[in-house]
Length: 239
Image (cartoon, rainbow, N blue to C red; front, side):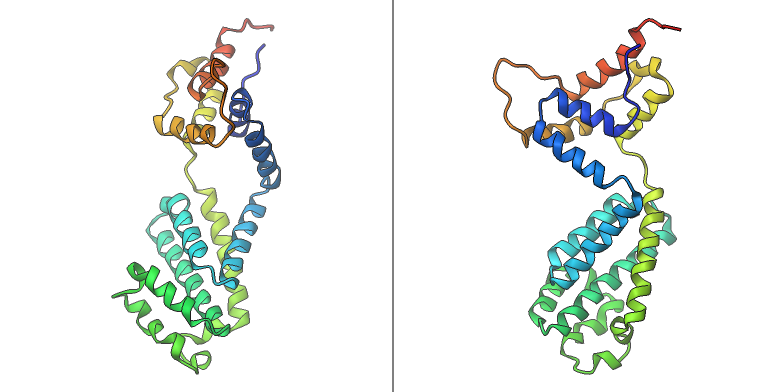
């Protein structure tokens, strides 16, 4: 009986192998090996965020939260989204505190310039515009807690738990939904809807790999998935 992939990871690996994307396949294997544990993924996210804060990298920090909001927190309920916004605001404030501690006021100004859509005309940020120039901020509300090591440790533990919980609620990806459908009903694979956006995503992968020589046709993701699922349907039973 022909083998039918039963995981998103396996589908992706088969696609990359069929397209002879050796470099991409190797990189994907390495990423999969290092990200098997969901806790490790969250740990890595927290590490990258703290690194961006320590390095005064406002672009990376903002990009990370933009990605989390779009890919993870968007599926939360109203209360969950409000919590996410609170964690995000605290991350930015820790960034400002770090910049002030290192006397890098330029990065503070860069933050306010780039995040004006969040901070301008926002009562929660009014006091923070003067923060970089407040020489007694460490002992002044509402800044005091962001200097407290115990509070900072609690914040990161709480954020870790919140990320872990939020990731568990994320809706499956398009390809994940396809694979789950195949696993449940291999004979119904003719009804699988191959979303054009999904095909476009894999086209980007193809463009990043070595060019295919002319005259050597490679299977598209659409063709590959259909052939993988149809092989199950057409194979005679050995039972």
